[in-house]
Image (cartoon, rainbow, N blue to C red; front, side, top):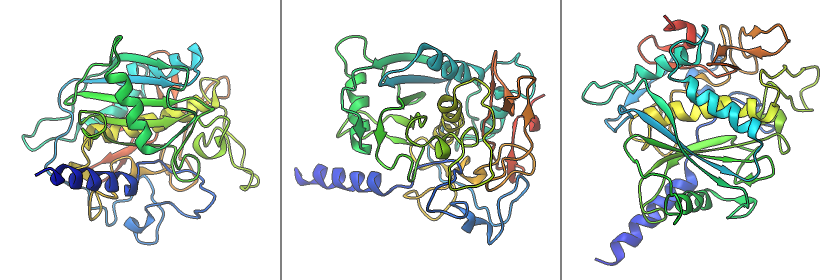
Length: 338
């Protein structure tokens, strides 16, 4: 019997190291087309495209109970940066935001159900927070050390984060001086679940990095653009912080997929869960009508010249659309914001 846990642990670690994390479209230096174009034959993905998309429910759990987001601030964060991110998360469940709204965008996510027919919760709220301002695991993190960071905060002697595997989401947000494995070259963020062998619990989590110093032209696109794309001008960010405004869409992307596929066995397209194509992956780079590839789609411009596509409680945000499995195309806040 003793060898059995070892085999299981090695198997799970192998999956973690090979899984394709969820990311939104970015101008990766090594790619010329969207990462999942193979799902759409040779065409680009536009907001109405439905060719060959086979999103299926694989009978795993989704988050139908009220969702609580517990945040770990890793590294040095300004108060203003934390405020932008907190207000975005609070806006997901806000009912009185100006339309088009973040809560209207979330209504598409709510359409997804579990095997009992229960919908994903309308309620997403802020939970407990931990500050890791002294870089407890260094300034270079691997995917496995990310789980160790989470462990240190859910098992802390002083005010540990609550253990809530059925409705809790754990966000590890790294500051702009922290490098994470594959950051900038392949990912801007990803989600998965923690291993009991490392953390002691199975908890859905996501990591998202602030790219302001490392690769804003990739992970804060379109508020920054890479030098190798001539003639393309960056858009003005709605909250005056290019790195954090770029993070918002990735945070939204990961929360939507954590809600619909928390244990990587619920809603996804593709042949197997090792490389799932999830509800935000299917809408890579689409922020408005007509969007696809490097074109964001039709957006809104504020009086201050800032670009956005939806309103929060007090702020404006640019957030990627998500796949509507009932309509079989990507939808934004206007589709259900009534």
